Length: 210
Image (cartoon, one colour):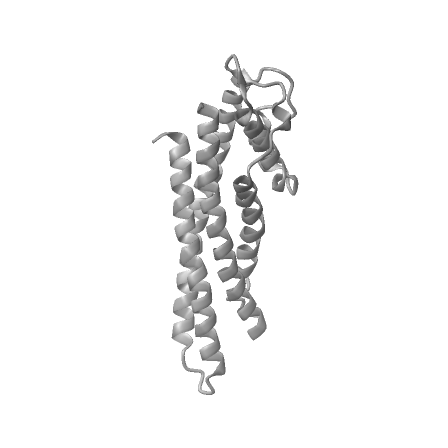
């Protein structure tokens, strides 16, 4: 299968987990509303079951996300080495940024994608005697790559925030409802991100090997 295939496989798994997370978020919202609106307070068990399911799924999601994180760093580093064979001239991002860029607070929301953009431009450039054209910087970057990255940054944050709200003991009804909604919307967004990511890495791998 290779590293790229493994990374793509885990992204598809992440997409499946995200779909379930979205469904459970809205199921939890419905269970909470029924319990809250019942004058006798019945339905608390349904709420607890939904909360347990969401929390359990989020635990699985964290493990899958960590695996994807490691695989993406390793893949990016290897892809950078391949791109160095295609272009031996000056460039903005060295191979060290394929690792270090992920560990700079706030900047890690931008730098890893910029590093991948440079690799993508070199990979997509026309080849001249087996190397990238000197005009590789003029190459555009794919929309699927930006879809993966932007949706991941936005909806990963929404899911994390929502996960801390829907079972907050000190929160009111509006806090819990917002939490469930954020988990649901976050799951939808992360599904899009996972699918786009799998397609993006497949496309970029093929370009590098082309």
